[in-house]
Image 1 (cartoon, rainbow, N blue to C red):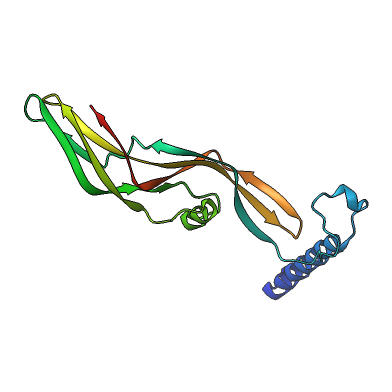
Image 2 (cartoon, rainbow, N blue to C red):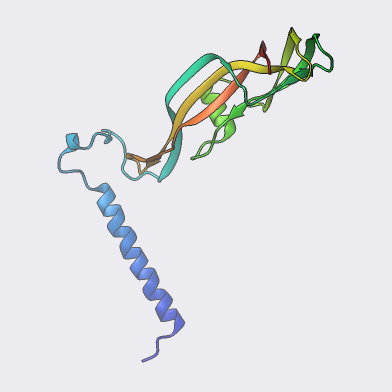
Length: 181
């Protein structure tokens, strides 16, 4: 027996409708023990839309952190017994690890820092340097460590997963560390 495409589509729609009715009935059923569900909220309709959100957790910060991965100025001695002097405005990189449901801007907002990719930094330092060696400047700022937790709401709140450790660095506008290398 051959079924026409209309008959097959109608059957599929009826099966889908039955599934949706069963799901809605299950969603409207009251739990056997309201207190057993820690995220159940009294007065909240169980007929809500499914949603998702992410948030920062386990946040910590370290002030006066030297970001030695971001060299912002260098003076190399060309002669013996030279004094290197750096006096300039440089651009330090603001790093923000995002993802796992959060944008760079959302993470920056949660850490209460700018989402701009760079920070203008005043660099002033000098030191005697041997020939062939350099005076190098690095930005100092605040380093943040955090995880991102992803949630799904149905309207109950379910934790869907947690990221590994993520980091951000927010350079200070007038702090640098200068080292002879």
